[in-house]
Structures are given as structure tokens and as C-alpha cells.
Image 1 (spheres, rainbow over the protein chains, first blue to last red):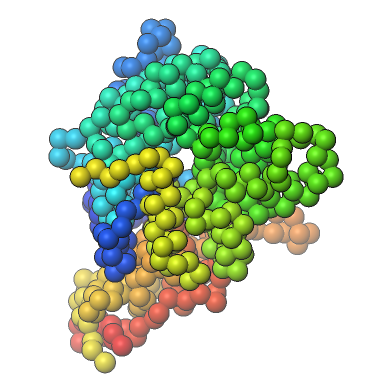
Image 2 (image 1 turned 180 degrees about the vertical axis):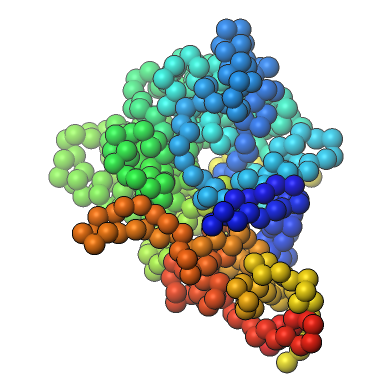
Length: 398
Length: 122
């Protein structure tokens, strides 16, 4: 049993927590909309890797760092002292109850807890295949020690492949690139690029490395050669000086989750990366969609006047952006007219990939796409699954 | 209008809620400060079980006479229930969405009959 702290010093006692029950309405939506008749691929979902931190640390090769991490993990709560970040209120003061309650959810069945829990929400929502990412490690790129980012991410990738991806064909991942060490990133692609369940690689966007630096070119070339997509997964950094001016988590989350991707996509475009790696598939994850019309208009307008500063480009920045891919969540749905315009501007029918972000607080159900009034049935199915199958060369497990 | 039995009055303490079913419709019934309130258990956002989340007082900013901010407090009067999926908050006494009061959950009449509470599912 768990007691949730409420206002006025009240408490709410909770005996049990079951994701299937929490998502019963999602199951009903899946049935009403006949999701079983077409594939639904979720290109951005999460697990809480620190719940398996002791297992992950077993895969850490540096004996000194491993001992440091094990000791820190034992002395305080998991990951404290080892992982950057910390301040943040994703659970909304316990209003999003799955955050505090997940610890009392039972996950029997012989498989790894992450597999059991992930399949539980996938089944409830009608999702056939999910690309899974870590949660706290989305801030690992802010770690002040580059060698710790490398060691932890390599341990995580090895653990994920061996303990999760190898055992469940419906769960895939784009593995963590330790981007603060370009050479280690390259080796990561070499080592894990063909591992079971690996559908590409992911850069956590919250960091301070320019994506156009020469040191990354061989990694991009290798990804292009191996036909593995590269994703930039958004994240916030409240410790950033500009973000530090904001006093609310809502503010930092709203702006922080687009800020780094705005910087990275601008560098990517102005330095002609799409011309250098024309076949590399690039995916921008978890910044929602409203930033894209802004970026297209802003960059096009400046490029028309200052094309001498971006001489690699042969087309407008927005045209290159229409060749890139975007995950849908958290889809801004408060102005349907603006959303329809956004879909047109990014060529959503072929470039947009549905993502839930479950179990995070601002997750989107497949119905956020399926119920849009301005999409054809074919477009809905492409966005919910067809586009992802094409981008990742997927076939569904039997 | 069909009446759906919610609970015995004695077994439905103040501050609690019950979820009942009327055909395909789920209804959340709240007992708060001596009165009963009932709404459809379907969030206006993405269809979550809006009535099943925590019951929390509204958070308020405390602004002094000179317009400076001096902290936050929980409201003494305004009470919300919160959809557990994404945090949409609803005024427990009206069913209105606290962030945009144009949005409102469908409400139902609650009646006491003898020792029992019923919701009028119509």
C-alpha cells in the first residue's frame, strides 16, 4: 500500500496499481477504432532505467567508475550522485499518479520487469511495436565528466541489448550515443549497429556540443552507410543560464524541450549536413510540432538574405526540413487550424511518426492522430505506423 | 431516467468518491463537504478516467497589496479532482475544467433515498 500526499495534509491510500486498469479507456479507444487492422508503431516511449541501475552497473567495464557508481547508488537513492539533472516535477505533485504508484505495480511472468510493464501499456493502447528510450539518462549529456557519459551509456546499451531487446521483438531502441566523445560515439555505432532490436542511434539533445563539428562526420557517414536513422531526443536543462531565468517547471519544460532541438536543427541545416549526408535519415523527437513552422519561416527568411553564410545549401532550409522526420508527441492540439497548417508544412503524410512518450506525463494516445478531422484514413495509418515501418525498415514480429 | 445505486450513505464517507457504470457510461460520484456531485468519468482531453485521480485543492498565488508575489497556498474553498493521465484539473463542484472553464464534464443528478445514494443516469 502507498499513501499519496494531498493538499491540506490529507492522504490518499492506494492498495494496488495496474497499468491495464489505468489505461482501460485507451483499450476501449483501440477497439472502437479497430487498431488491430493496421500497424501502430510508437517511435518514442520510455522506461525508467534507474530501476534496473544495479543490473546496468554490472555491465560497466571501468572498475573504478563502477565501484563509484555502485557505492553512490547504495548510499542514496538510485543514480543520485552519478546522474546529472535532478530538479524537476514530472509527476506534477503526484497528480499524474503513475509516477509514485509504479513502484507498487506487480510484474510477474518471468520476463524482465521493463518488458512486462512496457507490453502492458502497449497492449492497452493497441501499439504493435515501440521504440524505447531511457528517462533520467536523457540528461546524461550534461554530465561534467565525459568519461562517465561514455561508461554509463555503454553499460546501458549493453544491458538494454542483452536483457531487454534480445528477449522481446516488439520492443526496439535507438541506442544512446555518448556524443560528448565523438570517437566513442563512432565505436558505439560500429559495435551495436547490427545488434538485435537496434533501429538506429539517438543523441540526447540537452548538451553543449555543436552537431556540425568535424569530429562527428565519420559517425554520420557510418550511420548513412548502415542505413541507420539518427535521432535527436529533446530534453530540458534547468541549469542552463537562459532556462535558469524561469521559475516554473511548466516554463522550463515548454521552452526547454524545443530549445536544444532548435539549436541543433539550425546548425544541421546552416552547415549543409543534408547535402553532405543526403541519405542519412534524421529524426527529431519529443519537441512537439509547433516549433517547426516557426523554424521553417525563420530560417527561410534569413537564408534568402544571407545565403552566403550557408553556401552548402541548394534549397531553402524548409525544403530540407521536409525531408526530415518528426515524432508527433507532445502534439499541440489547442488550435486545429494551426495544426492542420503544420501538417501541410512538414508533409506529415510521409514525414510524421506517431509517438506516445508513455509513461511520461504528457503522453499522447494513438487517437490524437486517428481522430484528427483533416486527415484521410491512409494518412492516419501512415503516421501511426506506415511511415515508421519505412524509416526503420521494419517488419512486424509474428 | 434510470437510477444507479452508488453506495449506502453510511459506507460513502465525506471526501471519497465512487465510480459506477450505467451501460457504457462510467460515472464518478464525489462526496464532498456534505454534498454529492457526479460527472462522466471521461476527460475532455484524451478520454482518460478523469474522476479517478487525486482530489486536490486549487493552488493559488499569494499577491500582496503592492502586487508583489509572496508565495503560494492551497485554496480554502476551491477543490479539484485531477485526471490521472495528464493532470487536467476539474472543479469538483461544477465539473468545469479549471484551466478553461468553457470545457466541462457531463454532470448527473445525485439523489439520496432512504439510506442509499443514487445517481440519475440520463
